[in-house]
Length: 249
Image 1: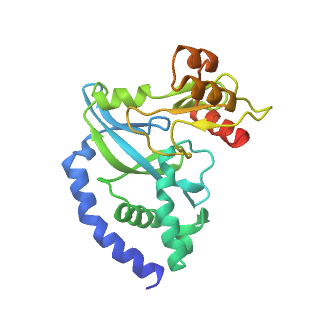
Image 2: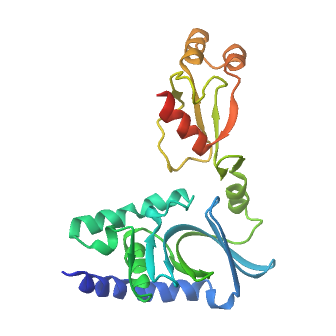
Protein backbone atom coordinates (compact mmCIF):
# COMPACT_ATOMS: atom_id res chain seq x y z
CA UNK A 1 0.00 0.00 0.00
CA UNK A 2 1.45 3.37 -0.98
CA UNK A 3 1.26 6.35 1.35
CA UNK A 4 -1.68 8.03 -0.41
CA UNK A 5 -3.77 4.86 -0.09
CA UNK A 6 -2.72 4.52 3.54
CA UNK A 7 -3.83 8.11 4.27
CA UNK A 8 -7.25 7.52 2.71
CA UNK A 9 -7.70 4.38 4.77
CA UNK A 10 -6.68 6.05 8.04
CA UNK A 11 -8.70 9.23 7.44
CA UNK A 12 -11.84 7.18 6.80
CA UNK A 13 -11.34 5.49 10.18
CA UNK A 14 -10.77 8.86 11.85
CA UNK A 15 -13.56 10.97 10.35
CA UNK A 16 -16.65 9.73 12.21
CA UNK A 17 -14.84 9.59 15.57
CA UNK A 18 -13.60 13.14 15.09
CA UNK A 19 -17.12 14.41 14.30
CA UNK A 20 -18.39 12.66 17.43
CA UNK A 21 -15.58 14.19 19.51
CA UNK A 22 -16.50 17.74 18.44
CA UNK A 23 -20.19 17.05 18.98
CA UNK A 24 -19.79 15.43 22.39
CA UNK A 25 -17.92 18.41 23.83
CA UNK A 26 -19.69 21.03 21.69
CA UNK A 27 -16.30 22.40 20.66
CA UNK A 28 -17.65 24.66 17.92
CA UNK A 29 -19.39 26.71 20.62
CA UNK A 30 -16.10 27.96 22.11
CA UNK A 31 -14.41 31.11 20.83
CA UNK A 32 -11.01 31.01 22.54
CA UNK A 33 -8.22 28.61 23.35
CA UNK A 34 -5.00 28.55 25.35
CA UNK A 35 -2.46 25.78 25.87
CA UNK A 36 0.32 25.43 28.40
CA UNK A 37 3.34 23.35 27.41
CA UNK A 38 4.54 22.80 30.97
CA UNK A 39 1.34 21.18 32.21
CA UNK A 40 0.28 19.95 28.75
CA UNK A 41 -3.18 21.37 29.30
CA UNK A 42 -5.39 22.82 26.56
CA UNK A 43 -8.11 25.23 27.67
CA UNK A 44 -11.09 25.82 25.34
CA UNK A 45 -13.34 28.60 26.61
CA UNK A 46 -15.70 31.52 26.19
CA UNK A 47 -15.23 32.88 29.72
CA UNK A 48 -14.28 31.68 33.21
CA UNK A 49 -17.68 30.08 33.66
CA UNK A 50 -17.81 28.42 30.26
CA UNK A 51 -14.68 26.38 29.71
CA UNK A 52 -13.25 22.91 29.32
CA UNK A 53 -9.74 21.58 29.91
CA UNK A 54 -8.03 18.80 27.97
CA UNK A 55 -4.78 16.96 28.57
CA UNK A 56 -3.02 16.60 25.25
CA UNK A 57 -0.14 15.10 23.31
CA UNK A 58 1.41 17.45 20.72
CA UNK A 59 1.23 15.86 17.26
CA UNK A 60 2.99 18.45 15.14
CA UNK A 61 2.71 21.89 13.61
CA UNK A 62 2.31 23.42 10.17
CA UNK A 63 3.82 26.75 9.14
CA UNK A 64 1.54 28.73 6.84
CA UNK A 65 4.55 30.85 5.85
CA UNK A 66 6.95 28.10 4.80
CA UNK A 67 4.32 25.42 4.05
CA UNK A 68 6.22 22.90 6.16
CA UNK A 69 5.12 20.23 8.63
CA UNK A 70 7.17 19.60 11.81
CA UNK A 71 6.51 16.49 13.87
CA UNK A 72 6.49 17.20 17.61
CA UNK A 73 9.16 14.56 18.31
CA UNK A 74 11.52 16.57 16.07
CA UNK A 75 10.65 19.96 17.59
CA UNK A 76 13.61 20.97 19.77
CA UNK A 77 11.76 24.06 20.99
CA UNK A 78 8.86 22.07 22.42
CA UNK A 79 9.11 21.23 26.12
CA UNK A 80 6.12 18.88 26.22
CA UNK A 81 7.30 15.53 27.58
CA UNK A 82 4.39 13.71 25.95
CA UNK A 83 5.76 14.41 22.48
CA UNK A 84 7.90 11.27 22.77
CA UNK A 85 4.71 9.21 22.52
CA UNK A 86 4.43 10.21 18.85
CA UNK A 87 7.63 8.28 18.12
CA UNK A 88 5.34 5.32 17.45
CA UNK A 89 4.34 7.14 14.24
CA UNK A 90 7.98 7.61 13.28
CA UNK A 91 8.54 3.88 13.77
CA UNK A 92 5.49 3.18 11.61
CA UNK A 93 7.01 5.32 8.86
CA UNK A 94 10.36 3.57 9.09
CA UNK A 95 8.72 0.14 8.94
CA UNK A 96 6.67 0.96 5.84
CA UNK A 97 9.06 3.41 4.14
CA UNK A 98 6.61 6.32 4.53
CA UNK A 99 9.00 9.27 4.57
CA UNK A 100 6.25 11.69 5.65
CA UNK A 101 6.02 9.84 8.95
CA UNK A 102 9.72 9.55 9.79
CA UNK A 103 11.11 12.81 8.37
CA UNK A 104 10.97 15.42 11.11
CA UNK A 105 10.47 18.47 8.87
CA UNK A 106 9.30 18.66 5.25
CA UNK A 107 7.20 20.66 2.79
CA UNK A 108 3.59 19.64 2.19
CA UNK A 109 0.10 20.99 1.55
CA UNK A 110 -1.96 22.23 4.49
CA UNK A 111 -4.67 19.63 3.82
CA UNK A 112 -2.17 16.83 4.43
CA UNK A 113 -1.87 17.84 8.09
CA UNK A 114 -5.21 16.24 8.85
CA UNK A 115 -3.94 12.99 7.36
CA UNK A 116 -1.03 13.10 9.81
CA UNK A 117 -3.44 13.91 12.65
CA UNK A 118 -5.75 11.05 11.65
CA UNK A 119 -2.91 8.54 11.55
CA UNK A 120 -1.72 9.65 14.99
CA UNK A 121 -5.24 9.44 16.42
CA UNK A 122 -5.65 5.93 15.07
CA UNK A 123 -2.37 4.66 16.54
CA UNK A 124 -2.41 6.42 19.93
CA UNK A 125 -5.43 5.96 22.20
CA UNK A 126 -7.19 9.31 22.52
CA UNK A 127 -10.48 11.20 22.29
CA UNK A 128 -9.84 13.31 19.21
CA UNK A 129 -7.75 16.07 17.64
CA UNK A 130 -7.91 19.82 18.20
CA UNK A 131 -6.07 22.34 16.01
CA UNK A 132 -5.13 25.88 17.06
CA UNK A 133 -3.92 28.70 14.80
CA UNK A 134 -1.38 31.11 16.27
CA UNK A 135 0.71 33.56 14.25
CA UNK A 136 0.42 31.56 11.01
CA UNK A 137 1.27 28.33 12.81
CA UNK A 138 -1.26 25.50 12.98
CA UNK A 139 -0.66 23.33 16.03
CA UNK A 140 -2.34 19.93 16.24
CA UNK A 141 -3.12 18.47 19.67
CA UNK A 142 -4.15 14.90 20.41
CA UNK A 143 -6.65 15.06 23.27
CA UNK A 144 -6.20 12.22 25.77
CA UNK A 145 -8.25 13.30 28.81
CA UNK A 146 -10.99 15.83 29.60
CA UNK A 147 -11.44 17.90 32.77
CA UNK A 148 -14.36 20.15 33.61
CA UNK A 149 -12.76 23.46 34.60
CA UNK A 150 -9.77 25.14 36.23
CA UNK A 151 -10.99 24.20 39.72
CA UNK A 152 -11.11 20.47 39.06
CA UNK A 153 -8.72 18.44 41.19
CA UNK A 154 -6.84 17.09 38.17
CA UNK A 155 -6.25 20.52 36.59
CA UNK A 156 -5.03 22.03 39.87
CA UNK A 157 -2.66 19.09 40.38
CA UNK A 158 -1.24 19.33 36.84
CA UNK A 159 -0.62 23.06 37.19
CA UNK A 160 1.08 22.68 40.56
CA UNK A 161 3.41 19.87 39.54
CA UNK A 162 6.04 22.20 38.10
CA UNK A 163 9.05 24.09 39.41
CA UNK A 164 10.29 27.32 37.84
CA UNK A 165 13.96 26.69 37.00
CA UNK A 166 16.12 29.70 36.27
CA UNK A 167 17.84 27.76 33.47
CA UNK A 168 15.16 25.56 31.91
CA UNK A 169 11.92 27.37 32.77
CA UNK A 170 8.97 25.48 34.22
CA UNK A 171 9.59 21.74 34.54
CA UNK A 172 8.53 18.89 36.78
CA UNK A 173 10.23 18.93 40.21
CA UNK A 174 13.06 16.59 41.15
CA UNK A 175 15.17 16.10 44.27
CA UNK A 176 18.92 15.50 44.59
CA UNK A 177 21.46 15.49 47.39
CA UNK A 178 23.61 18.56 48.02
CA UNK A 179 26.75 16.88 46.64
CA UNK A 180 25.67 16.20 43.06
CA UNK A 181 27.11 18.71 40.61
CA UNK A 182 28.33 19.12 37.03
CA UNK A 183 32.03 19.63 37.81
CA UNK A 184 33.07 16.54 39.79
CA UNK A 185 31.56 13.08 39.30
CA UNK A 186 30.03 11.78 42.51
CA UNK A 187 28.13 8.69 41.39
CA UNK A 188 24.38 8.55 41.00
CA UNK A 189 21.81 6.48 42.90
CA UNK A 190 18.06 6.72 42.25
CA UNK A 191 14.85 5.84 44.04
CA UNK A 192 13.86 3.95 40.86
CA UNK A 193 15.11 3.66 37.28
CA UNK A 194 14.28 6.78 35.30
CA UNK A 195 14.39 8.12 31.76
CA UNK A 196 13.56 11.46 30.16
CA UNK A 197 9.87 12.09 29.59
CA UNK A 198 8.68 9.09 31.63
CA UNK A 199 5.27 9.19 33.29
CA UNK A 200 5.23 9.23 37.07
CA UNK A 201 2.61 7.94 39.47
CA UNK A 202 0.99 10.62 41.61
CA UNK A 203 3.08 9.70 44.65
CA UNK A 204 6.42 9.41 42.83
CA UNK A 205 9.15 12.01 42.32
CA UNK A 206 12.55 11.93 40.65
CA UNK A 207 15.07 11.47 43.47
CA UNK A 208 18.83 10.82 43.48
CA UNK A 209 21.91 10.94 45.70
CA UNK A 210 25.67 10.43 45.41
CA UNK A 211 28.00 7.58 46.42
CA UNK A 212 28.85 9.20 49.74
CA UNK A 213 25.19 9.58 50.64
CA UNK A 214 24.60 5.96 49.68
CA UNK A 215 27.34 4.86 52.13
CA UNK A 216 25.72 6.83 54.94
CA UNK A 217 22.24 5.56 54.05
CA UNK A 218 23.56 1.99 53.97
CA UNK A 219 25.23 2.41 57.36
CA UNK A 220 22.01 3.78 58.86
CA UNK A 221 20.04 1.06 57.00
CA UNK A 222 17.43 3.65 55.97
CA UNK A 223 16.72 7.29 55.32
CA UNK A 224 16.55 8.85 58.77
CA UNK A 225 17.59 12.07 60.51
CA UNK A 226 21.29 11.22 60.17
CA UNK A 227 21.31 10.17 56.51
CA UNK A 228 18.87 12.90 55.46
CA UNK A 229 20.92 15.55 57.26
CA UNK A 230 24.05 14.38 55.43
CA UNK A 231 22.31 14.37 52.05
CA UNK A 232 20.59 17.75 52.55
CA UNK A 233 18.20 17.11 49.68
CA UNK A 234 17.65 20.02 47.29
CA UNK A 235 14.88 20.86 44.83
CA UNK A 236 15.82 21.02 41.14
CA UNK A 237 13.91 20.73 37.88
CA UNK A 238 13.55 17.55 35.82
CA UNK A 239 15.96 18.79 33.15
CA UNK A 240 18.64 19.59 35.75
CA UNK A 241 18.10 16.13 37.20
CA UNK A 242 18.88 14.35 33.96
CA UNK A 243 21.88 16.56 33.25
CA UNK A 244 23.23 15.55 36.66
CA UNK A 245 22.43 11.92 35.94
CA UNK A 246 24.26 11.90 32.61
CA UNK A 247 27.34 13.57 34.10
CA UNK A 248 27.60 11.62 37.37
CA UNK A 249 26.76 8.09 36.30
